[in-house]
Amino acid sequence: MKTLYISDLDGTLLGSDGTLSAYTHGELNSMLGQGLLFSAATARSPVSAMPLLSGLNLNLPLILLNGVFLYDPATKKIVSHAAIDRKSAETAVQIYQRHDKNPFLFTFDGERVRYHYTELRTPEQREFYRVRSQMQPGCFYHLDTLSVPAGQDAVYFTIMDRYEELKPLQDELESSCNVRTAFYHDTYTEYWFLEVFAAQAGKKNGALALKQMISADYICAFGDNLNDLGLFEAADLRASVANAVPELKAKADYIIGSNDEDGVVRFIREQLNGC
View 1 (cartoon, rainbow, N blue to C red):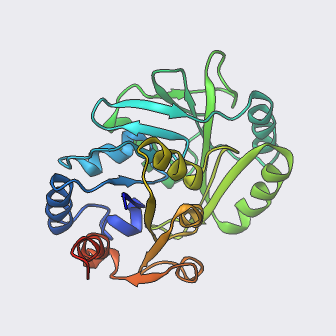
View 2: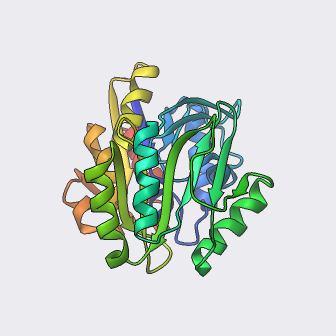
View 3: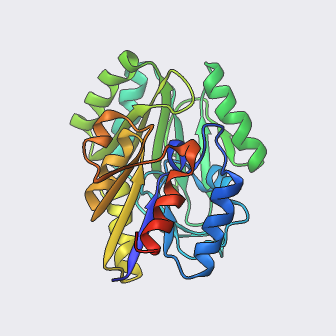
């Protein structure tokens, strides 16, 4: 059967330092050279995902922003995108304002992804801005008041804060807007991410779209966090790394080596070798 392998990045394919190990990099390139069908499904955008995958001979589109984009790393183009409908986006803006929260708003104009913000209140927001603005200068736009700019599709809202601050916000967004959310603990800090995107997006739908695009028969998926539950729903074989959250481990067919033990590529190699 034609098997598509899809891995989450942070906490799964990437080590605890947020990078690919030399072993994973080399072994993955070796398998890609032998025809491995491999993609990543991540909450990261093209700006932050691609530097981490530099030097990999990727042969398939990537599933980015929790399934909002299918992105071709060869042409550096977005193949498809899922936009939040205008009414839901405007309602979401009102909800954020009522809760006195200032998310980053991502928009897409058909060619470029733009990142909008009103305030950088916390060290985490400032770091998010610093890292990504260095990766792609000119991609951030300051807004006096949170709003969706004319002529652009709202595709994503993201904010980082404490669980108790974000849970009421998630509940209201899900009940009032035609959106999907991903709410999960950050791999690198004590905070939680709340990410909001179109109802037709999500890692599950992104994985199924890619499967159909390449006429694959089978999906083998790898993850570590709550936002990988949808990816596992799309998969025929599910492997969680040893450092995964308990909720994901409970859905896994296999518990493999941790992200610091190159668990993903070692498992794929075993599968290809028929072990």
